[in-house]
Length: 272
Image (cartoon, rainbow, N blue to C red; front, side, top):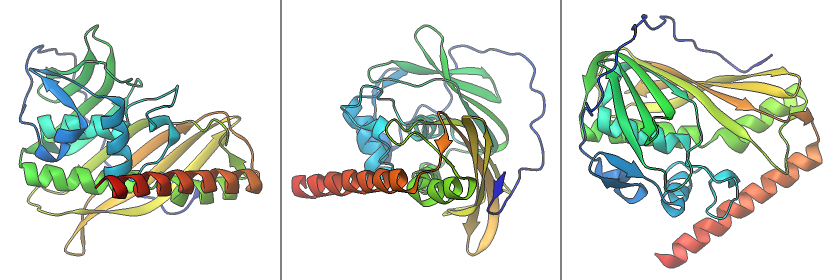
């Protein structure tokens, strides 16, 4: 196991039991900063490839090719699902998110409030893609939500190459550079309190646990406001198809990543 610093959420979620309250949709006010990145019709919403791809690149700085509009394996960024859910349900003092499916373009989703402390993004067939469990006080302040979401997804988008490459080099195992696949598994956040205005996310270390051709990447982060730690979180990802580390292949992957980023930013600047 590779460790580059570690922070843990120290109190587990209480057992919430089984409860379903279908048709209760919480705070359905749309945060304006997300308006360009999804379409809503009553209590359902969906994403086009362009909306999802532009969120990944323009908001999160995430140039993972799986979010490219022309990618055959295209999927909506997990961080966009997370952002939309928080914009509608508010931010709780303690939250856990479990990702259980990849969303393609044009899939209509809605929020199913299973009970006061559990919500999920589901499609028309009831298939669940993102499950949120929460505890403590709740903030529905749109400015606070926008700040937390933006700060988090910009940190989250730094996974590659800034964090992943040093972890892979130290472990001497790497993802398949021709078909890179790293899946969002879960994320946990806990604030000391919600009397906050502009907490910023700061990287607090990472681990890479490898077992055969599969690995778990764990990213730890703090929320800081006015220089003080006011919250902490953990993001976990699953890396599949691992193989022996090859510096030349990693260098080529990073070069392709940077070229894609530069080309998109140039195209976006010319269109502005």
